[in-house]
Structure formats: C-alpha cells, structure tokens
Image (tube, rainbow, N blue to C red; front, top):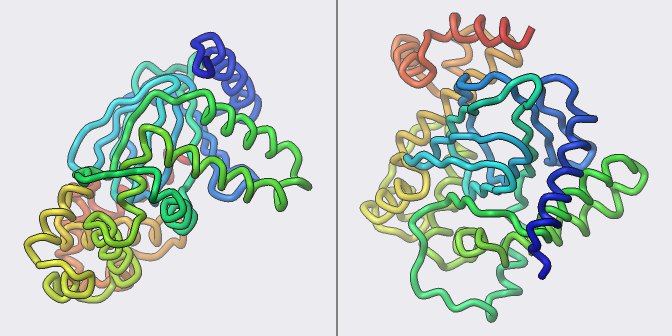
Length: 303
C-alpha cells in the first residue's frame, strides 16, 4: 500500500530535517524553483493578512488556522490545502515555539497548466454537481509528499532546475488534479463551468482593479446574469465583486507603502481611490490600524 503510515512518517521526517537546514530562523525562503517557498514561523497567535494567488500548501509541523472565502479552515501536520482562486487570506498559527516551529511549504499553481491537464483528463471524470467552494483541505498522500521532497532536493542542484523543474511541476499539478483536491481544481480550470466563469471575472478584476467597475457589465462579459455572478462569486471568495476589488486595492496600497515607500495619499490614488479619507477609513477597517501606524508596526516587526 503506497500510503502506508510508516512511509508518510518517514517522508515527513525527511522534509522536516531539510526545512530546518534551510530555515534556522523564522522567515519565508523563496527557493530557486519559481513559485516554490519554504516557511518557518514561531509567532503563535499573530495574525497574518495577505492577498494570495492560487496555491497548494503543505504543513510539515504545527497547525494553522486560515480564514478564506468566508470560512475558517484548520490544517495540521501532513495535511495540504489548496486555494484555487486569488483571494484575501487571514491566518494564524498555534502552539509554535523556537524549539518546535511551524514548518510549511507552498507552491503557486500554474492555471494554464491546470487548464491544459484538466482538458486532457476530461473523459476520466463525470461530475454533475459543481462545488460551491474554491478551498480544499485533505490528508496528503505519499505521491504528493514525495513530489515536494523531490522539488526540495532539486533546489540543491541549481544547474538541473531549468530542465527538470517544468517536468516535475507538471507532474505535481497532475497529482493534485487526481487527489481529493482535484474536483475543485478541475471545475475552476475547465472552460464552460460556472466556477470557471467566476475565475474569468476574478482575472478581469485583478487586471483592472484601479478603474471603476460595473458588476452588470462584468457579468455580461463572462456570460452570467448579475445575480448569478454575485452569488457564485461570494461562494468562491467570501466577498461580492465590489468588496473583492476594494480588498485588492487595499492590499496593493499596503504593498506600495511597505515595499516602495510610497506615502499613504499617493498609494491610495495609485490604486484607484479618489478620497484619501475613505481610503484611511477602509484601510483601518481591514488591517486594524490607520496606514501609517500599520506600516510602521510591520517595519518594526521585520527589522
């Protein structure tokens, strides 16, 4: 049996030792394999807010709570999580210490690769009902654990990455599509499904978030009624299209202030706000503090 508990424990232990070699202190470590990142955290209970692209994450040690798509998910050692669409995520970890840190690795998913593979696999699956979520948490099988270990080992052979990484990433995307995460990923990435129409709407908002948006016009563009788009959009992201655009603007403004040292007023205008007062009010509502105080606190924590 390929998913023998002993083999899973062995893979987990090997992955844990390798992660600890890379991560002697709390940090996010981007590997040389594009989109593949390693994480160590010790600050239990401290909330973390971000706007993430579709990803698969695997917990090697510890437990994480994440609020995504309007619901809370808890995932722990040897469990993987798939977030199938771009969305805001609020997370915190529990029971992490310096001696026993939270260890996690994640890979940003390639939507084009998922669509291409889902199309090739269409005959293998008959799905009458569409899922009403874009999030999946499941125990991780040995095939996927081994694939992550191989990617980690590949990082130690940089000269092999250009040739081997694309093949290995394609294999991992295939394994995800035939795993318990597969139904969600197939429906989000197969043209013609309602979930894929919502994904197209999300892609449009991501590309055009700075400009005013009319939801009825967006609905026509993705061949849905306004009511249908609103309902399915909320099911997949936890937000209405307008709330989603607002959250995206706020996260991008935060990034501009934090990474590019823009002033709050100029960051607000850059992302499409016309009123600085409104920007400050909405920023505090989402991040808990006014822009300047929030950015100063984040810089202090990172110092």
